[in-house]
Length: 62
Image (cartoon, rainbow, N blue to C red; front, side, top):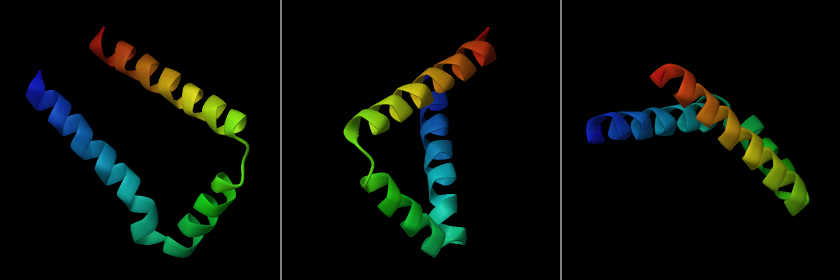
């Protein structure tokens, strides 16, 4: 179980690093636009991502 969590964490880092690696200017522009969004919008977006992630984990472990 612990090994699987480290693998998942590593994959998250790989996926998160692809944007700045391949398109740093566009990634920076996206981050600047996100920083200008209201907190409620960011909170909703974060909640949707958490729910989507939980659904994927649930489907994969079923």
